[in-house]
Figure 1 (cartoon, rainbow, N blue to C red):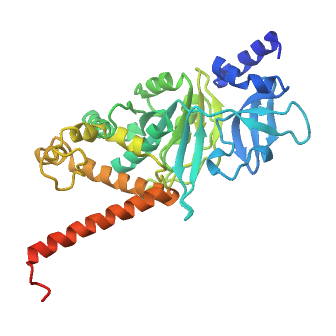
Figure 2 (figure 1 turned 90 degrees about the horizontal axis):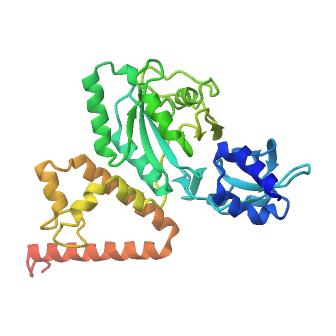
Figure 3 (figure 1 turned 90 degrees about the vertical axis):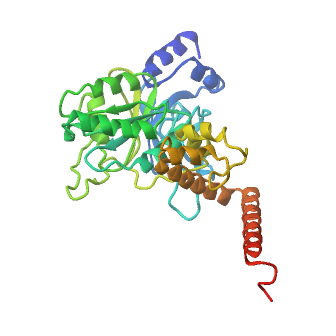
Length: 369
């Protein structure tokens, strides 16, 4: 590829996140005459790819491995054939980040929702009662992906009292250390949309949340036009139907790109121990002061975590949520890691033996006779 052609490609793809690092990674494929492009939509073995010249439809037959985490995904940078009918995607460039969740199937597979994402925007509706546990679950996956999470409290106009809104924001901030929490209304001027626009204006953002969280309305507000269809939520429980049915990548008018996703009913963890630790960073800091380095924070003497719960410095709900997510993540990892399964069984046997020994000591040496 000539320098003028490379410059033209960079200029055309820059709004979609193309930079010098991507150009360097693509150089071997440019030498083969392939075209660089970014996947903006995937469906039924084909994908739409934005290139320097046009939006192309390409077949993914050559990049459909058995590993579900390596299939082509919205947000991927790919090498596409310059012509042909059908036209094929020949390879995917290595991903910088990947947002992955566990599927609801019994096979315990991971499902990649978006690739090469800089910000994970988690939409949480204020039309219903806050579910802080679900927020923490989304955050764990976001941190694990390598993206910077942002929590957006949508439909803020439904909380007209400023004091109440402030308390709701504080509750979420407590559950999201180190994460921006932005209340936003798309029907009146509260300033939150400007803050969010500035955040997503650099890089790629993926919009996540349950059905009815207001993602499509939020996407339209960021895009400045009604691109995404919007449906009303049910009054009885605030839940909505799937407005978005595919993951779509869209260039934002103020810079940056947005990947809108369907509403997620299930948000299963997938090998997200690091992400869980990031969400509950205050527990990790407290654990450093425990008497025992392998303290499980259950009933051990000198446990700084339990002491913080007793004094009210650490909400008990946070500790319970932390335990729940760690257990779930361990189960998911164990299903795909035979060595870890063996370690868990060994740990269960050890704890069982300790429990039986304690019970025998309590009952006395002659209780069986």
